[in-house]
Image (cartoon, rainbow, N blue to C red; front, side):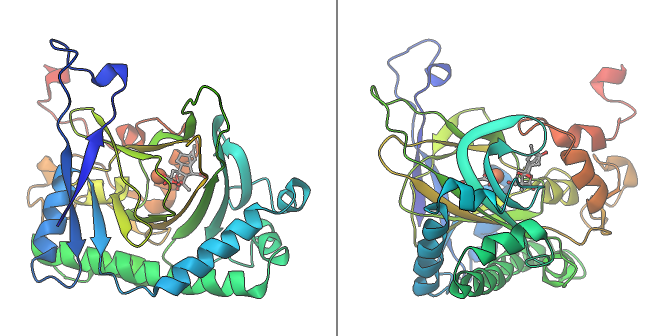
Length: 336
Ligand SMILES: C=C1C[C@]23C[C@@]1(O)CC[C@H]2[C@@]12CC[C@H](O)[C@@](C)(C(=O)O1)[C@H]2[C@@H]3C(=O)O
Ligand SMILES: O=C(O)CCC(=O)C(=O)O
Ligand SMILES: [Fe+2]
């Protein structure tokens, strides 16, 4: 099964020689996690796109509906009530400002740390404004997302013959795992003439991988290796997996963290929920020795997840964050 993605016809994507030439559609795999061939499809997709769709995932549909309804109710509260849970620091309610370094978008959001649901004052304030059922649904959803991300990582480890086989999945299963959940609400932009604007600017996700689900409103785009942006058709009953920077490092660049962005929709609001599966803060991140037997071939220096996160928070959304952690190879072109 595949998903057909259409290249976005922005000026920069028009064929340089023949501007009328229509860009060809891109086929992204839709992986059924119960398919015996799933692990091969996942690895291929992570190498080619850093992105794939997951179908037949086993998460009960009424949990998705309920969480979506409760999140919509939160975003429908008055601005002054929502602001009681903000500004995001980074957790809690945020509006238009993304991160601490001046990035903005047409989005409001709630960012929650899996282990600090009530320990963070801002997050606790989210749940004070909302019925208990919201927190219960968030907790159940986070457990499901932990399940999907660890399953995907288990399959990756099997296919790449990583030893021990639980090496990757354990990083997100342990209670110290530094995972987050973000709910993004992109209000419809009532504009004449209709004009798309940036909802969430282009970036890669810093963690191991992200599991994304949205309502049926389009807006998400991913960037292919050749720089073409393609629109991802929404599918509210499936999940999309996004490879993050940390998995790029651990696979020594074999998997690429995919650049993605969200454009606003002029007709309907978009609601997305994205789970960022992160390792424990003290975890040492480096290319896995079973994938890179010769130390000299490692493209990245070792760092802890905590170091990477602090460094990421000093960058702007669209910066290439891994640059600081790349090794200077002795015979790279720049050294000749
Ligand atoms: C501008 C920023 C926002 C961000 C932290 C950062 O300094 C750079 C990475 C951003 C990002 C992208 C993926 C996730 O949405 C996020 C929660 C994350 O872990 O890294 C955000 C950060 C954020 O919004 O706080
Ligand atoms: O809202 C979306 O579809 C994507 C959001 C995203 O990329 C993020 O929160 O990091
Ligand atoms: Fe993202």
